Image (cartoon, rainbow, N blue to C red; front, side, top):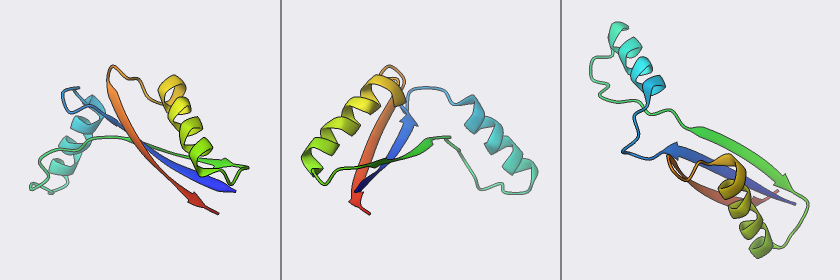
Length: 82
């Protein structure tokens, strides 16, 4: 079996209101050296296969079609054996 660990982030040019709210809250808590916070998504998908090349293609298709919005987000993933 393989496990894909997928990271989806907003593109740097896209505003992140949730991240801004976290940065403001951290400032109010006394963490004045925090300049910016960006909120991202982390997804794990387990695959019942040992074919790494096929799994990479499948995960790339899943990310492109469902998990990441190509207009506003980027993604990367790693696949490991479990």
